[in-house]
Length: 131
Image 1 (cartoon, one colour):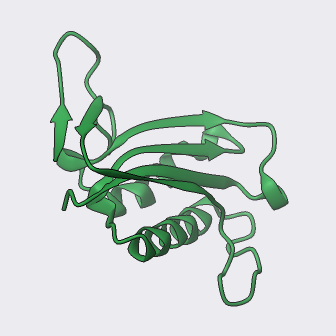
Image 2 (tube, helix red, strand yellow; image 1 turned 60 degrees about the horizontal axis):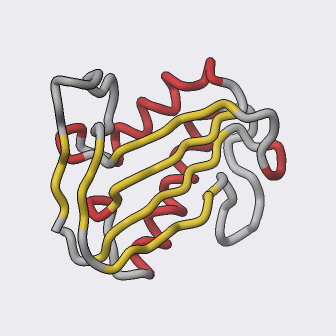
């Protein structure tokens, strides 16, 4: 079971995420995904956070599928950005993967450095059997 939690007693979401998600079932914790092409092992979208976000989310989606889950089973994501000025571009791609009404809870933070000097890394928690 997956339930969106919303309250007017806290700030409303300002993007494709929800304040909280309550869930029961089998949890899957997906490690941070960076924009590596799974066939070549090469970084994609050098210098382009939108392309890197797309690849990172594709990688995340593939792992969820292997676990028997879908993006609608995701209850929490964390987005790590090398530069918070890239937030809008990342968010535009992110919104294509998560429907705003049912989007997971999310945190987005700027970090000093990411593996292989990529611009974005995304991790998630999903609950199998929610979709």
